Length: 185
Image 1 (cartoon, rainbow, N blue to C red):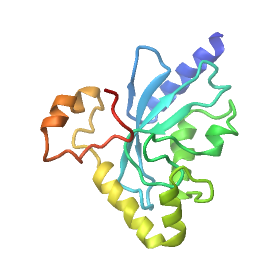
Image 2: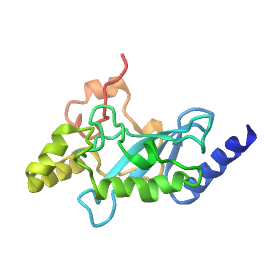
Image 3: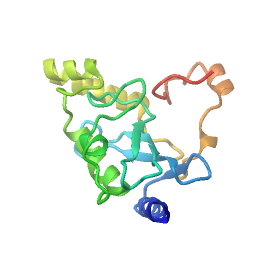
Image 4: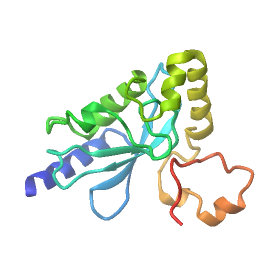
């Protein structure tokens, strides 16, 4: 199965060459984080999210698993797990697509055109349908609270994140970097 392996390498290199900040999780090329910026001229503009990507062994024939690590308020993103409900990734994936498509087209489209009728975050979906201005204000609050661009955006590395001890002892800035989901004990 050298073809999927070469394709995985090629797509990952293409993503890195497209000026996305990519941080490998393990030694392999199957799991990594990508820094994703909110689309221009949207309520998400100015936000920066850490996205976890996992490539299955059968990639590109099988879709990547994509999820938000940084909290985001959106009807089609599960607030606790960061899972994304996006048809093109979950159901209609094709080997013609690549990782750059995910970050330049699919995720921006998800943020620009939420689908409240197929929610993973029921509260966000209901608020969007019931009271659009309040929904948009909540999105902006989440962007400001959780998805601020980091001052050290030169390089994204795990060294930049607080350890559990630092997090526990740092009461003043505990909301600056919040991760969706719960930490493993």
